[in-house]
Length: 115
Image (cartoon, rainbow, N blue to C red; front, side, top):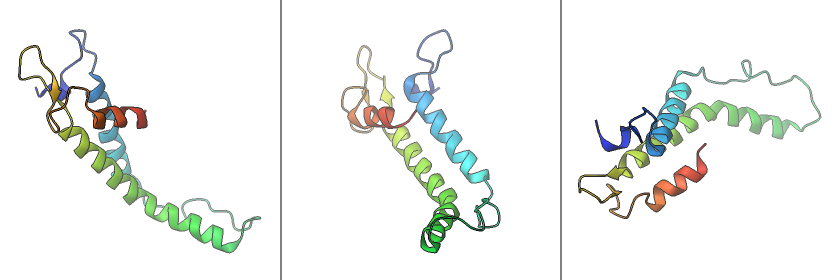
């Protein structure tokens, strides 16, 4: 089993890296399975206090959100695969991608930004 998917302890808990990777993979999978949002499916009200331009922008956002979320999740997955702990050397742990001490700055930033 690669180091980034090994449990953090012998008690079956996922490492923080594995937990984030699993989260982003699930987001990507859910976004890929989601039905595209279109004006007839998002429940956009027929009338409202907002201007027509605002409503058009909202519909455009909803229409593109599925693809954009999937692409963003894909980028996060790629970053987490690249920036993973490499525990090949006994007693030392560094990032496989940038060779800095683990956790590297890239993983630390992802950890802060993702739940």
